[in-house]
Length: 193
Image (cartoon, rainbow, N blue to C red; front, side, top):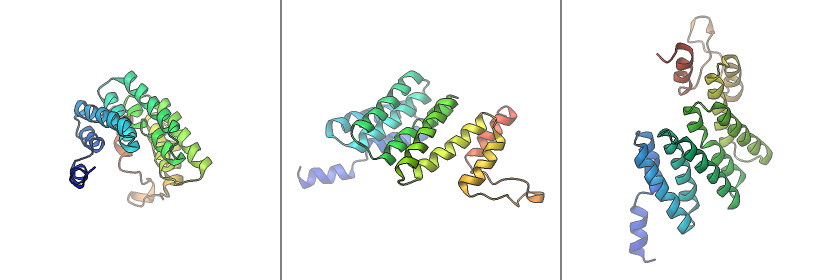
C-alpha cells in the first residue's frame, strides 16, 4: 500500500464509528447499513475492531428497528466470533455487555441481566481491567429499577458507585443516582408521564 493510499485510508471515517453516530441520532436503518458494511469489511481485512464494533452496532440498530430475532442472532454470532479469535477476557466482557442496552429497550430485562452477570463473572475470574464489570454493575442497577427493585438499586448505587446519601434534600434522605438512571426510574414509577 502506497503512502497516498495509507493517507486516504487514515482520513476516511471508519464505518463502524459512523454507525455509532447514526444510531444515537435515531437513524437506525443507516446505522445498520454502515455497521453491516463494517462487519463485512472487518471480516475480509481481518480488522477485529471493525468486525466486532460493527457487529455490536448492527445488533443494537436491528433491535431499535424492532427486528429482535435478527438482533439476537447478530449478538450471539458476535460473542462466538470474539471467543474464536481469542479476544482478551476483558474485551469478551465488553462483547457480553454490548447487547444489554437493546435487551433493556425491548424489556427483555432477564436476558440483559444474564449477560451482565456473565460479564461480571468473567471480569472477576480474570482479574483484568474492571470497566466492563463496572458497566455491567450499572446495567444491573438499571434492570433492577425496571423491575421495581428500588431498595436493591439504592443499596447497589451506594456500594458500587461509591455514592453517599445526598444532602441536597431536606434531612439528606435521598441518594445520588447516576443521571441516566433517573428517567428510567421516573418512567417505571409514574406510568411514563
